Image (cartoon, rainbow, N blue to C red; front, side, top):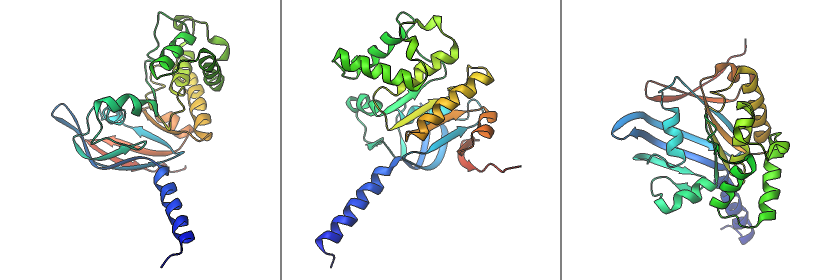
Length: 244
């Protein structure tokens, strides 16, 4: 018979262990409409991990990303992400899920008709922020994290592709997400700029954020090795990099 103190200790540890799992997929298969894209995926991602998804274009990396941020329904298997059950997720819950996930796209997706600051204000207002001073402070904070603090009043066309991607990463950080999904974030960038973006992402990861990054840039994997899942022939499997 456990004492009350011992029970409390075990209960707290149980909660802590559960809360460390950011993403869990069990026996998951992913479909685009009725076409099977990936099958038999089993994956657990813990808080603070940096995980690569690699594979050729069309191998399913973007499809699994869409399932994770609820753009595609999970039809087969079990999935939870940032404490949301992907099997039972309702339409009205999707905006709340996405507030706990930061998403970085290959093509930046900045609004071209407004400044960098106004792009970020748009996201904050859409996710429930109302106080102008709090919004200004948050925008300054996230832009500083990506080295773009002096660019708030620039228009997207006035800055480079790499700078636009930095802003996109800042945008993903606005609501202090538990997980960042980066879908080919260096896909439209030259090699040197890709390295700069990776440095930003690795710094964010070093500060405790969990990051899943889809890429087909093997040079980045060699320079910044981390746990890697390969997508090939409708399957997903872990690959281990061997040092030469």
